[in-house]
Each structure stands twice: as structure tokens, then as C-alpha cells.
Amino acid sequence: MTQLTRQDCERLDQDDPLAAFRQEFDLPENTIYLNGNSLGAMPKKALDQARQTVINEWGKDLIKSWNVHDWFSMPQRLGDRLAPLIGAEAGEVVVTDSTGINLFKVLSAALTVQQKACPDRKKIVMEGSNFPTDNYTAQGLIKLLGDQHEIVFAEGEDILQSIDDSVAVVCLTHVHYKSGRILDMEAITERTQACGALSIWDLCHSAGAMPVDLNGCNADFAVGCTYKYLNGGPGSPAFIFTAKRHQGKALQPLTGWWGHAAPFAFERDYTPADNISQMLSGTQPIVSLAMTEVGLDISARADLNLVRQKSQRLGDLFIRLLNERCAEYQFRVVSPADNELRGSQVAIAHEQGYAIMQAMIARGVIGDFRAPDTLRVGFSALYVSYADVYDAVETLRDIMKNSIWQQPEYNRRHAVT
Ligand SMILES: *Cc1c(COP(=O)(O)O)cnc(C)c1O
View 1 (tube, rainbow, N blue to C red):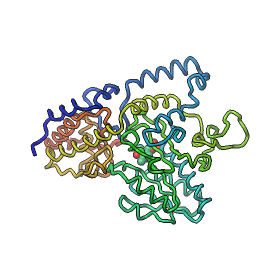
View 2 (cartoon, rainbow, N blue to C red):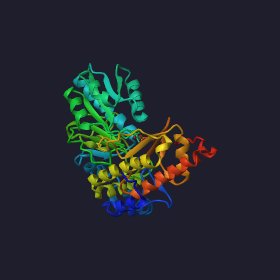
View 3 (cartoon, rainbow, N blue to C red):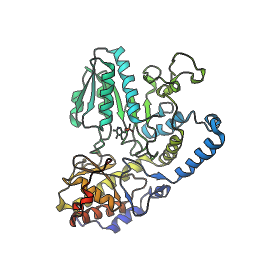
View 4 (cartoon, protein in one colour):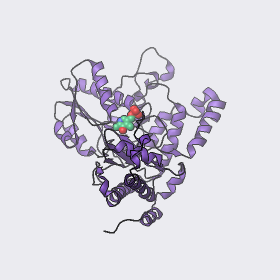
């Protein structure tokens, strides 16, 4: 097989049906941004929207904005905008709070349902290698419950077998944050429900990166963030999906006034809303929600099948170029080679991973590092080009060939990796 050239990659960019989306993002000069899996890029419209929300709405209309600019219904409105991207219906999603807090809410809600239906079931199946906050949150909840609940950790292939009729809830992340491996949402949800358990899916690395079909899989609950592939901005609020059949029944315990059936009745006692609004707790960060809406608007216009197809091709291209151009430097591809089993990122391992990534970042190729040895590169199909991938691998090759990673400044650890 002949080696790929940069011209080959430029040709792929010319034929890319998503190429025009890159113009909607403000990316710095001389930067190849391969970290949209951690923090999405800034849409150009974000700045205009920030001005509108801060100067016109907050500044001029002050408290009237809750009505005149519809601030109060933003969690539901953005939820409805997001719903089609994850295979949900309008009225099944709200955008609110963080992923960790939302996971606390839906896991509590699911356990409460099960506590009534099958009080002897105490097991929660999770993946030990998942992004830690999910596991930490579950551990905190169990401690608070002070009863016999226990987390059963399983990994990848072993997850299906770990689900039986002693399990209350199965709580998993669809696309693994480190390896990018995709779990079979349909098969796992089916097995979960056949065993009488409830399913919770974390879509942090799926939402906006690929079509997800929550209702097609009959999922019970889901959470996910909007600051990764949905480009909602740093710390933008996350989302909660609750299937219609659970609404009004599966109740979350952070019973603040926004989740009340009549928030402005100011009653003494809590009465839960009988719809998705019960998943809310309190006043939301409106400026951040306004940024989130900008990101969602872009994703709503993009064909998710094309997004998925392009990100698979970008990942394949990266792996091929790594094999062709960096073969002698002992990188190990951690992500599945099969692009059907791989999300929108590629993880590669190297003993000197930290220093290599620091040297890459200094050259304007931005990926990240996950301990102990994993370099991650994410391919946000809306703004990463095929030529970017070529240039990124060329930069990596140069860093390895000239041992640039050995320089002391690349070996000092920062707080955020
Ligand atoms: C990014 C990510 C989170 C983020 O949680 P926050 O509450 O927003 O800090 C949670 N879970 C997974 C699987 C993630 O990838």
C-alpha cells in the first residue's frame, strides 16, 4: 500500500460535506484542536449571544427577562432541542446542572423505584474504569443511603454476564472516556430490563458525536454533558433524559423549587412536577445556558450520520498515519481498531506519554493525557479536517525523531492534564 500524502488528505477535505461547519467556529491560528472530546471549540456566534444575554437581556430587561426572554423555560427548551440528537422525544430531556449532579439524581430516582418494586435488590452494576466521577457519585449516594447497596464493578465484555436478577440498576457510560470503546447500548439495556433492572446511560462522549437512540433501545434514564461534542462552553450545564414512562413516578431527591409542580405558588411543602421538570432543582446559570443553545443549534443543523462517518474516517486516518509514519516509536493504539466499536477519539499509549503530549501542545497540536500513559486525540467532525490529522501526526513524528519530548519543560506536571 502506498503511503498517504498531505495532498490525499486535502482531497478528502475538498469532498467533505461537513467542511462548511468549520467556519462557524473561532479557532486560534496555528492550532490543531484535537480536544473537542474534553472541551468543545467556541462557536463564533457565542460572543454575539453573550452580548445579547448579558447586555440586552440582563442589562436592560433585568428581572423581566425571566418572562420576556423566556429564561425560565430554558432547561426544557434546550432539552427539546437536544432530544433528537439522542433519540429522545420532546418533554423527555432537560438541560441543567452538571453531569455528576444529574447522575446523582437519576441514580437516586432509579433506586427509589426499585426499592418499592424489588426491595431485596441492592446491586448497582458499573464499570470500574469509567470516568471516576460517575463511580464517586454512586459511592457517595450509597453512603448517604446507609443501607446494603453495593456497586458491582465489571469491565467491557464482562458487563453482560454481571447483569442478573439480583441487580437493581445498571449505570454505564456509552463511550469510554479513555479508550473510546463503545458499549452495545441495545444489548445491555435489553439484558438489564429482561432481568428486571433499570438502565442509566452516561452519554458524555456520545452526545453530538454520533447518533444515539435512547428510545430505540428503551433506555430508562440518561445523563451527559454539553461542553464536549456539543460545544456549549466551559462548564455548560449537562442534560438529563427520563423516559416518559418514568416521569411523575421516578422522583429525584434534590427537591428544590424548580422541580415543584407549581414553583410560583410558593407552597410550604414539596409537590413534584409530574413531568421532566421534576429533574430540576434550582435557578440555572442563564448566561451559560445561552452559550449552550448556540452549540446545540449548530449540532441540530448537522447530519449526525455524516458527523459519525467523518469522525470514524478521521480516527482511521490517524491510526493509519501513525502506523505509516511513527512505526518505530512504539506507540500502542489502545482504542478499538474497528471504527464501529470506537467513538470519536483515539487513545494511544506510550511510556513518555505525558512529555510527548506537552511537546505536542507547545507546537499547537492540542490533545490531552490521561494517567498513567495514555495520549488522547479527539476528532470533532464539525471542525477538524483531514489535513489537520496529517499535520498532527507529522508534528508527533518530528517530536519523536528529534527527541523533543525530553526537554525538561515538557516533563513538569501541571494540575490539569
Ligand atoms: C466528562 C465526563 C463527566 C463530567 O462530569 P462533570 O460533572 O461535568 O464534571 C462525567 N462522566 C463522564 C463519563 C465524562 O466523560
